[in-house]
Image (cartoon, rainbow over all chains, first blue to last red; front, side):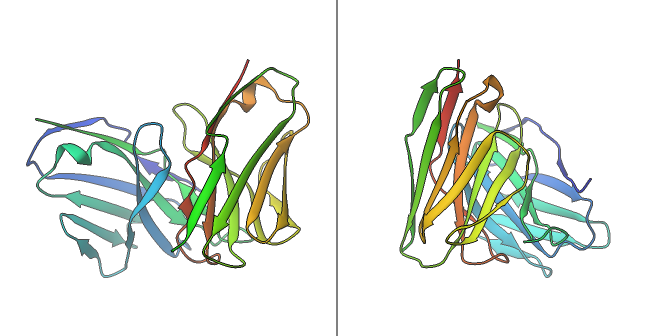
Length: 112
Length: 112
């Protein structure tokens, strides 16, 4: 079965800390990768796409390692507002329409 | 800009009752539309997707059904709800099968 796996956490970090999440995927044919953020009892929201060359958006850096089939998200200078569950998402082209496969998420709690 | 609406926001229904959840998208045309369910403590599960009016694909056998009567309207239905249908139902849209998906605010369904 094609899967996306994440450490569920929780990751409890102080404000200002740097924290990194990893995610592994099983389908080597996967072509697109994303990180979503989901606040408690809210819908997932796109945080960033993950490109082969890696990409950065402010305090957030995403990287892809195709050889090892994992994706990472690095958050620098953590803020209280970063507390949420971070979902690793892979575009699975094995299905008929290349639907998104979601990990179960990694919970982050940033403390004062 | 595009917006996606879902209603109702919360719903409590008895076992055996019917269900109708509605999702509409504004600001785009001919989007791909998706229904997901997120059970407590679990990842998102794709239920249905649609690439056009009247075109519905089901990902998981169940007692739910979906319809797309208009280009930007997606409806999730059931004739008789089960306890196991409880969960957080999310509608999403994307421009096509290759790009990221954007989620509506969700409907939290409790079947008693």
